[in-house]
Amino acid sequence: MSTRAAARLAWSLAGLSVALFAASVVLWLLARSAQVPESWDANITVASMLGQVSFLAYPLVGALIASRRPRNPIGWLLLTVGLLWMLLGASDYYCIYGVAQPGSVPFPVVWAGITNWLWVPGAGLLGTYVFLLFPDGRLPSRGWRPLAWLSGVVIALLSVGVALSPGPLVNVGPIQNPFGLEGRPWVTTVKFAVLPLLPLCVIASALSLVLRYRRSGGEERQQIRWIAFAASVLGVLFVSGFVFPPEAWFADLLAYARLGSSTLVPVAIGFAVLKYRLYEIDLLINRALVYGSLTVSLVLVYVGGVLGTQTVFRLLTGQEQQPQLAVVASTLAMAALFNPLRRRVQGLVDRRFYRRKYDARKTLDEFSIRLRDETDLGQLNADLVSVVSETMQPAHVSLWLRTPDRGVDG
Figure (cartoon, rainbow, N blue to C red):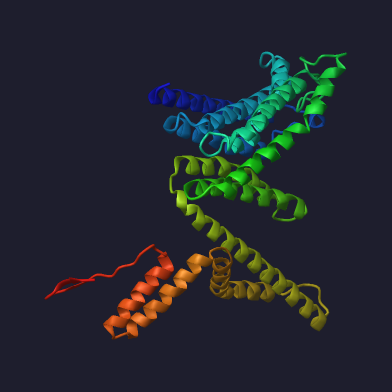
């Protein structure tokens, strides 16, 4: 396929994904207006639509990659995952509305049966082949071919097992699976036998990316850092859902942050595969470490200040009501501590994770101080050569000076 034909196909699939997303918005509004029984446990919340919006990044980034790197399967994988997810969302709301309002749309139960298993190839392709083939579209080595074949077999068998298993469908209450094979226990056996293999394939695929990172260098290592950074942010937000209680005042903000952060993975893949601003990932990691630690520290200072002031006030006055002055004082303390604490955290992060850059910056700072006071030109030349050798570590350093009378001296 030529590059132009690949670009047309990629953007056509992306356009189809956008059309499915627009249809899902309309169907979501219709489903919310219908009389859906609470016993169905139908997921027609605002959060579900936000999740649909975040997954729209997959087909768009996939089309961008596939149109520019048509030989790299990563773009086509993202397109497939995004198209499946848009179809899953639109079909889900279609089924809920169709079953809740009988006769409103054709074949809602049939579409519910199809929607019942679409999550398997969507999640399977994203969790296995994207990791296995990232970033150049090839396996790390021939030794990973069995895992690639096993992942494909697991995804196919699990899709068939879920599609043909009898039982109630998700989101549409007591409606039974129209494709379920009653009296065929082997179908359920296959589903539950294969189901644990999918997360194992995902873990093994992620391990292949870790091993690829350890064996790589330079540009490929920077590419892997992009997806590792996105995955780490997702992991932190996911773990926060188990650490903080659901009744906390910021629980809803964390939930929306988890939904919105789903776009980080395709965006990071796009930056990495297209090699656009590739080496800025170090700056992003640095800022994430600094401002993440700074935020946690300031929150602890604020909460500690408020609780400490409240305790002292209660002991001195015996009153339970905390004065507004404590909140104001804690806020002012946070504002005063922001810059000093940021500089301290920045220095700590640089010393721990960016030691070479930190030492180079310290060396340049010391040289700039000597530069203001040094009057001996010979000593200044030696210092300059020493600084360049220490900070940039070249194979050879030469200093050439141009004088008005003698031309160039080395």
